[in-house]
Length: 494
Image (cartoon, rainbow, N blue to C red):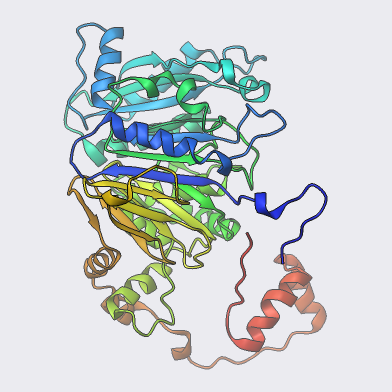
């Protein structure tokens, strides 16, 4: 039974954030996809939250492909006669500069920040092609959102040698962005040659009127990933609005403290030849960020270090495989091998993700967050955290379903098809001889020789427990059940 009393009515309860994406399989970008994404976002308004001011939202945003035709026009107006390189051979990003009115001597001028960023980019082998003031209309913003509103600057980076493109160019942009964040305190909503993010401390209805770019007729894409934020484990802020650079997230990561600690513990031994020296880019996880932001940062590192995006996602969110006797042994070996490299990030969580070409969603193994999808006869694909985000005639729908625990739904806009969950995982499992590696190098505990048990006095044990931070709760809820059953106790919140 649901409790009802006072002003609380359970029938009006809405849980967690709202997330949706739209994509087309026709192979060409369009303004219609961006419009559909913005419509879906507005219909997720009840999934977001506001404070005491109804016009200061927890966050809303949209992620699209690089709108090449639009960018050529607006940068051409600023620099007549200039010419952007071909699509995929230039980087564009949205930077959150300090507000122009920010008080105090610590407020570095825009010119100083731009010069310092240009220097970092040059050190990493890229040149700044141009800066652009992003036009916004803050008239509808509440006092809280407006008082913390950044100044928005768009930057274009190019390779002066003209050699880098695609993911190779994004790896260079990643180094520049991380260094700018660590050395200058400069936050980028995105900095990529494949995707562009517009987001902020906005409501779903404010996003498009606020960022004037989003209404431009030439702003086109094959994908649109949108998010309406309900702040759960952090306070609202402009940088913590979603989508992040790769993901938009509905739910919580309840293992986040352990996940962050394990990443920090491994930073000293991390190596990524494709990314170069990682030391200037550490820490991987930004202190004080949300669970969604941390997930995004780790996923980005795994992907840009050489793994496909589905590979990186399944490293972090594996399906329930350990006691599934019907699962293909090669797939089980894939998960078993990666368990040695990455602990599962457990929800309840529904994750949507994209690199600008692939766009998809995965539900964690707990399966406690909804996600439904529809495919039309003209190749229009919609996935959302609930039904009704778009009005699609029933006669046009050729396929629909829900995302199941541990399953992945993936759209390949370049290949113009939907890749099935079984195909994704079979291909990943066959890429390397994971089962052979496990047999050759993994040492099961039961094969170790017997060891002599050394008895310690109770006071000695307690002293060691205090030194290593054990609490009575951990003894009662974790260690005792493990000793009694030989299994790890599991639990979830949310």
